Image (cartoon, rainbow, N blue to C red; front, side):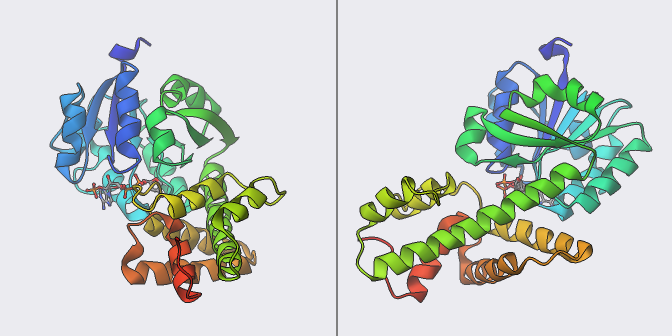
Length: 299
Ligand code: NA7
């Protein structure tokens, strides 16, 4: 299908959604955009997309509709709320949910959409805002292989590493497993940092040692940035990391899986959120650990 003749709706133009939608537009698709806070759709409208005032209009005539919203409540609202997307989607359209939401909601959404002959793919993403801007996200896709193949060219405008992981539920589960790893690694880095800092080890020395050690992780580059570049814009909000960890723990409860470490890290995320740090990058766990340890984060 020629790109310009392929109509795509995009709903949710937050930190991640806006640059993802910009890449879909740049690739030549005809793009309809909607966001709850309408002003956020204006830059895309100015760049050639069409901003719609009513949510269901973002699905009208669209071959694909991409949703990138905060959480389960938001996804449920935009799909099935008053004047939600389900009222505008045409038969045969593919709804692509890029948000990190629960597998339970994925099953429910897939079933409800099937009843109106709409296909559903879950396609949550890893990596942050910079990767979203560059079209280099990592994407996990769950749903039918046929729908995955059909959506392939569109997904490639947003992501450089795309993994088809199988039936509905698998991608939303695996992304939560990735998130709990991210949260626990960040907390582990914070503890590594405060112990070394309080005993007087210079930051550069810590990093030199860590980066060539078997314990290194790409995630620690981000933690390092939180120390050397404190004014940087968040790449992944702490409030969303807490949401992911809550979803992972709920899933673990349902499946009788013990996750003691994740449960502990959740306490830190809750404390940070209650201290007003929900809209900071989740690397702010370092700040919290530094103040608990009475060591300066910098200097
Ligand atoms: P942001 O920047 O917090 O953006 C969240 C988006 O979700 C934003 O467009 C919100 O609209 C929208 N939202 C939130 N609640 C609702 C409701 N109830 N109804 C409609 N739209 C809503 O998050 P990110 O872009 O960083 O992340 C998005 C997802 O990817 C999330 O699942 C992460 O865990 C991973 P607003 O602009 O606030 O009006």
